[in-house]
Amino acid sequence: MSTVVFSGGVGAARFLSGLVQAIDPTEITVVSNVGDDSVFWGLYVCPDIDIVIYTLAGLINQKTGWGLTDDTFTTLRELHALGEDTWFNLGDRDLATQIYRTNLLGQGLPLSEITARLTKARGLACKILPATDDRLETRFLTPDGELAFQEYMVKRSWKVPIQKVIFKGADVSRPAPGVLDAIASADRILFAPSNPFISIGTILAVPGIRQALLDAKAPVAAVSPIVGGQAIKGPAADLMRDFGYEVSAYGVAQVYRDLVDLLVIDQQDTALLPKIQALGLNAIATDTMMTSPERKKQLAADVINAVDAL
Ligand code: FO1
Picture 1 (cartoon, protein in one colour):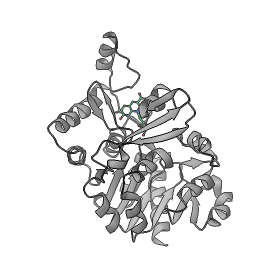
Picture 2 (cartoon, protein in one colour):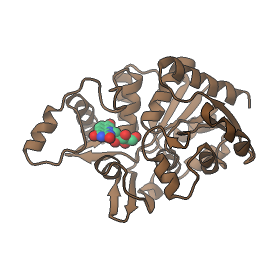
Picture 3 (cartoon, protein in one colour):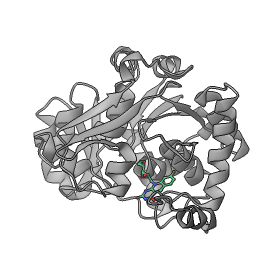
Picture 4 (cartoon, helix red, strand yellow):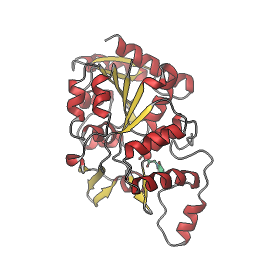
């Protein structure tokens, strides 16, 4: 039973760490957002891919949800001493991944091949595919001008209203090798509890992926990243508000209504089920908080059971 998971960063990684316990990890293909990718000091950083790899390898910094556990920041401090702006915290150990990736990109290897090598080097059994090997940059039009993804997310702590999300390069991007085939041959397709606009939405901005999803024979299920009217992490709630959606699991259902067959929402939002079902979606409520390995595995099992029952 092959399972394809559309994935952003921290929330997706936590969900995937439950999924690899609940089903055979060799049958999981992760399609990762790459719109957050950024270049710092000439190094090509793929936060969402790295967050998923580090999490599944048991190496993630549990407190932040990104970066490596027990990392140090000596290189960053030296860069600061040289007068560099060091708001993006690349740890010394994390830099090894960035040097490895950037070196291979420079040799002409596609991101998908480099990601496969990183996945193998970290001993993971699942497959991780970037949505595209082409450069696709999520950028934000704000009252202060256009901001790159990490400028908005990290430097400005997403405290700027968004007028428009720009997927620079998306129009000429192509799905990475294996992405369309994985979607077409999947038995289940899941949207991790990621940002509907700038994680899942960015993947869907790659020409061909949305259509592949609509054509897929597999049922599609999404886990709501909004619980009790709030985002678990990141700017999902702010973006929903900026784009005129209700900040709730119902708002998520409205965003996803043409794409998914099933929405999994948190048990504290159970009262929203009839409203979501009235949109024509299947919906279940369960514990989506993922605060322990057991709860992560249970959420994954609940999603799998619900999607297989469709
Ligand atoms: N997020 C932060 O809030 N502050 C950081 O300094 C930061 C550094 C960082 C370094 C490597 C990496 O892979 C991720 C990093 N993140 C940081 C997370 C990242 O900005 C976002 O969480 C993702 O782009 C969203 O999925």
